[in-house]
Image 1: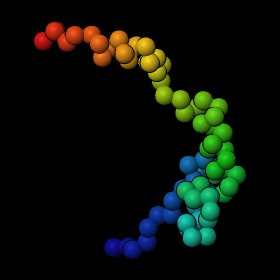
Image 2: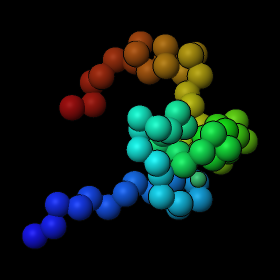
Image 3: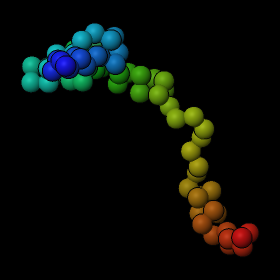
Length: 69
Ligand SMILES: [Zn+2]
């Protein structure tokens, strides 16, 4: 049995991630990968599929009487 844990991998470049106490970019391997991840968010790569309901639609849904059961 081994006590050795696998080192975490950078989600961007798959490089081994330095320990949190010496790595301000944790859980990324470097500040560069950290900003790359932010860029993905702003670039829409992580967008949730489907479109969000507009406030009007939500109000409509709440007002509708639930008599179908
Ligand atoms: Zn990386």
